[in-house]
Amino acid sequence: MRDWEYADFTAAVHRLTGIDLTAYNERQMKRRIDSFILRNRCQNYSDYYRAISSDRGSLKKFSDFITINVTEFFRNPLQWEKLRSDILPELMKLRGPMKIWSSACSTGEEPYSLVLLLNRFMNLNAIHILATDIDEGAIAKARQGVYLQNSLKNLPEGYTEKYFDCRKDGYHIKEKVKACVEFRKLNLLKDPYPKGCHLILCRNVMIYFTQEAKDRMYQRFHDALLPGGILFLGNTEQILNPVKYGLVSLRSFFYSKTIEKSTSLTERVGNQ
Image 1 (cartoon, rainbow, N blue to C red):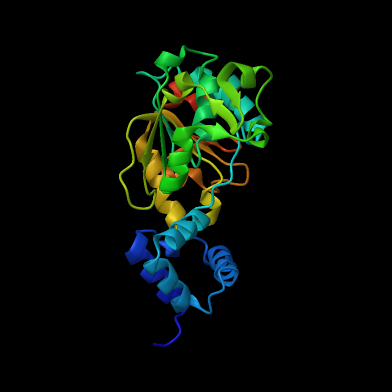
Image 2 (tube, rainbow, N blue to C red; image 1 turned 120 degrees about the vertical axis):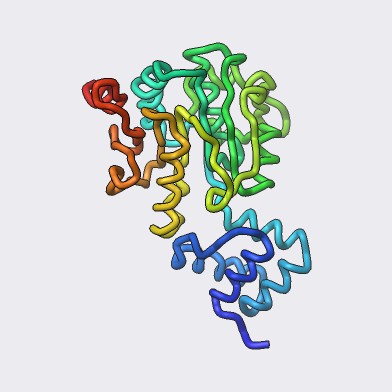
């Protein structure tokens, strides 16, 4: 059998795992995979595919590697402060109970951060957040809710004592916080999105996708939002033409689904 090209490998991985690597930035992803293949002492793409397709442990390590789980509580604190001071108070004026989706939740720091932030506005028993990720291993860790001290470095003063139990193996987030988050597996490229969301977070993920994949996802995020709902992106991400997707930029990294100007969140937040 001839040595595979990168395209052969991505097609085989898609059939094996359902993960479409062609939707990711090819240069970034190819560089990551090439280095991982060398690290695992394989000769080429076909050699490495044989390894991951015949051993579940190797396949799990590969899946964990390509789904890029790097996060911490209140990552990029200035954005979270903007969410607290300007965005959430206005979102609470929209109809219905607050529906929030953390769409690439990784190991849980983001949705749990949302719970802690919302607890400043409402009781924990009133908070429900849907948190999804493509990586089942990351979701399992999120459900456990055990974190190292470095992940907690951006927590506001007093939060560690209030929301965590310190044990020998790390900081365990309290059960009352866990109860506020529902974790599910979801592939952003192909699975149905939830509807009627007040707030969707998709932070530090879009930079890895092709522009074509981003176009599809931005439109689907728009469709998942309530009129006036907010899409919250990461620190290195920006939608250059949000109007194309029916969105309006509020300030950096926050985008509102357009509604009539007289009642728009865009107008209220923009004037603050």
